[in-house]
Length: 345
Image 1 (spheres, helix red, strand yellow):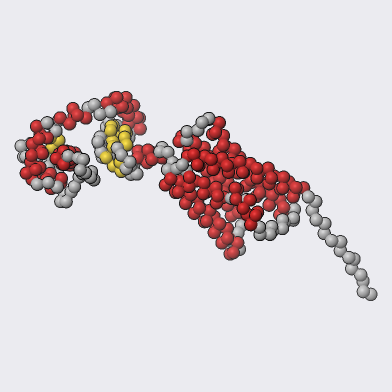
Image 2: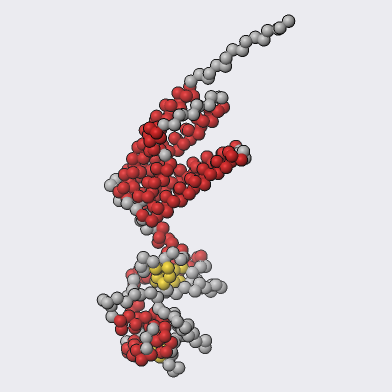
């Protein structure tokens, strides 16, 4: 039989011992954790090295655990986990395991894949509660009940993180991603104009991506409102829908007006620089919209700011619509009459 041994310098996972904890109990539980990773057992010396105690202390701890049937020693003096742990583990989430196991077994057989039920152990770890493998499977996943791994490593942990309410860190991440995307988009357009390599296809792609980004952002806010925000009335879910409606019309209306003016050979004169105009247009500025996501972790502040920008977009949509319609309805400027060319003879 291939007996595993504890690697040199191995220590148990980081459970910091403080003044309010029992050092002896801490070391005893650490021995059980080490044994759970070595199903073929370890010698008392290996356990002492793994836990970081003297061999005499390890021997007394093993004797105590052995008396409670939490571990046992075989004929070769190797220590393994005892059957008493089965009795201790049986009541753990018993109702959940009883309900989940038949469903998991059926799913494992139908998908021919390993199915596991994972619970969140702490802010950074998850623990497998039930693992079910399909019968007669050719490949098995090395995953067993009780196994602990980082919450950000594995589909189960990532799914848990995705279901958590938004935090300030996530809001900062959304803001950073939007700003970087906007910077790259602007740099791409500037580069195309400077190098003279702009094309109709490139302009079309730029507008389509901008529109898709706008739609996706407001849909994401709608989902977040529904899942994580304690809204006083379900009708508040209409706010992202209305905001999306106004934002898309402002964007599409501006692009279409520019194209129609270009076709009619009526280019709009460039507006003179105005600080007042720049400040007045801040509510519909994309940078301001991105900055609102910095408050995503504060649901009250984010809701108030998001609703305020929604109202601003509705007002500007009405104002812009009137302005664009008047500009397109105005008669085209007449070309000055040409004087007849006189024959010098």
